[in-house]
Length: 94
Image (cartoon, rainbow, N blue to C red):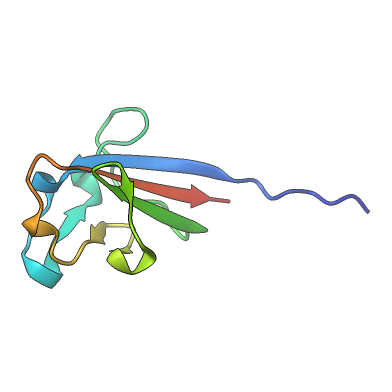
């Protein structure tokens, strides 16, 4: 029986730190505050991705830096970032 590789694709969402709300541990960026790969406003993040990567100012972050749901990504103390800092969330789906 041949081995079939699973389908994998990426969905990327961009924002800036200034698009987030909240302070300290409650700082988050709503999915609706991001733009998707097509450059249009997103409505939600993917449901049940295989994993996701968070990039802050083009630097990949450790897994314990954030938590994501379909509605928002929480980045504790992200409010300390300069508001113009680019944020990219890349969800890998299968």
